Length: 299
Image 1 (cartoon, one colour):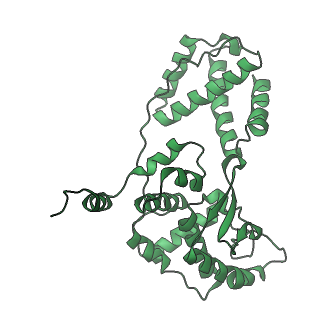
Image 2: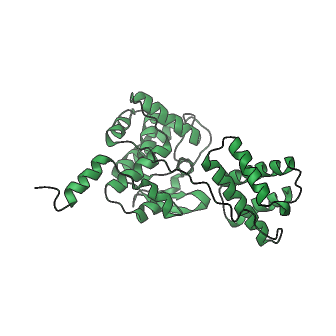
Image 3: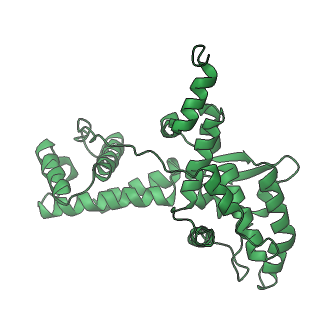
């Protein structure tokens, strides 16, 4: 079984170009299933049948795993057995007829314009770290970039002449993200002033755009801590994290008339279904559109 897992991991990394994060989830799910098979004294993957799968699912629910977690494990095992079947290591995929538990899709939280304005006003733009924090916040909101993508942005990835940023996203999918005037101003100010001062604190020459207080590359954890501090300084009670700014970017774009296909490209979603979760709108905006659009809404 371990030998098959090694082969499958290489397949995910090389052929599917899956991210380390995705590969880790697959491996964890399969390790969990292998541990179950060992407990049941099942030594061959070929011996797994519908009865054994039902026992496994019962165990998962007894552990009080959520529907989303169970659904992911089933999906991982389906993919694994599909791989084994294609390489003639098993004669059939016993998970092919196992239906995924229905999962709920909570509406993503987002910030209102007034809340954003508070965040944009707290940084000291005369201080190198304040300049960095402002540029970071502007870029998160201007592009909808993921935190993992943001930490990997290099100086050479930014083209100020056309206002775009090169991003290497999930599964090494590349895309170019436009950014507007406010993000451009904050970014140029930081790169030309604050970033140069941060570099004086280190002997190395990192090419990462966003640096920490010691002049080294800023990590995803560091970015989250910066946002938390900005929220604290703004005396806000909402919880803000990089992904919430991504949700805010997507929600505001749709509210202002962006189409789903364009938003899909900007967010780097492989499937449009991932983007459709953002089609919720605020009640105020919904009413405003209705009043402006319906022929008999007004006198």
